[in-house]
Length: 186
Image (tube, rainbow, N blue to C red; front, top):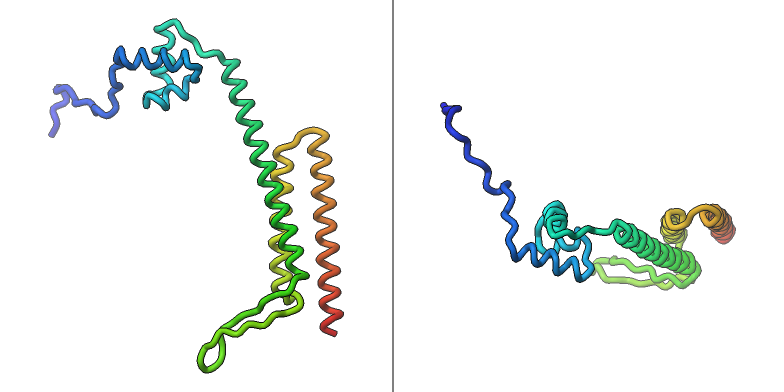
């Protein structure tokens, strides 16, 4: 049974490390180099709060305008990345749709010797076309989702309108393909 009058041992892992003169000098040097509070904290492997306390003690302050500019720049970079992904998805959608009308290599193992056999078809079978349409539809939808995230105001309305037109055209095209396949089978 523990004696409650005895002092309890502290968890040393949770005790803050003392800030050394070297750390203070590093904070000031990195501040002068233009690094932000969080960047300094990462660089020195100390908490952002410690960086703020050291900076305040040194008479330094982090300009929130710089933080706002950095945040805005990051948002622009992310929007550009989303736009690039949107383009890539649309390219993949187009490739999937174009593959439907290309010759299709069908292969399988078969026979007593379990030999690989290949047959070149003029175009993809209906099941493969269905899969390609699904792939294209998902890629177009994801591209539209990314487009909606990267635009605002009038641009958003135009993007949604374009996405709706693309979706409509894709559905009509798919119906035509199914009708053509049904006519060919008849």
